[in-house]
Image (tube, rainbow over all chains, first blue to last red; front, top):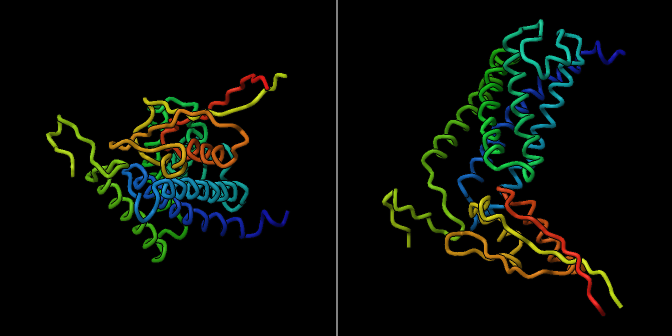
Length: 196
Length: 80
């Protein structure tokens, strides 16, 4: 098949890799907004949740295209097994393995969320923390294996993603989630008094 | 004459619920929130023919970030 020897799979793989990282960043930020209970006045909380879910579907589609085109492309010898099992790629074993870990983490988070109602909440949540694993490994993978990683536009994209998630993550740690009725949960242990 | 009717009841699992309040935005006709943001369900069953309510209830079930809501279908035999 001429398609397999053409450069287009390779180009698609490189492009969707960068796009996937951007989507993954947006998914994580939207997830942070949902978990910190942002919204209610200007934007509905359920809308942020919908945005989080739709973005995650887009991220999975792009990362799916990234993995499929990488495997079927003949420019580098990466087999199907390397898409899920780390350290099986003869080409840049460690950087590709980091990407494999990222993909596995994304798959785990995605699949457990599809069957969320059948899972125990704490197990779902434990797996969902894997999103941060997916983000960090994706960024590392992009930096170490990306063909375009050292071009300016790609570096700026990578720094932009890292910076965005760092800010969102720090904000998440310090944000006090506001309850639906506009009150902060009162906990006697924290010695705080309810607002209003 | 006996006829089978299908109706629904929206239920919340109080252990899973953490008061995100998405359900009250999605199904305001079925759910209100208490002052801490936890849902108060009317507890009334509604018929399958009540399309708007069924639709809202489904959206609330799907939209719950904790998957704490469920739509229970009840089949009851009613004599006409």
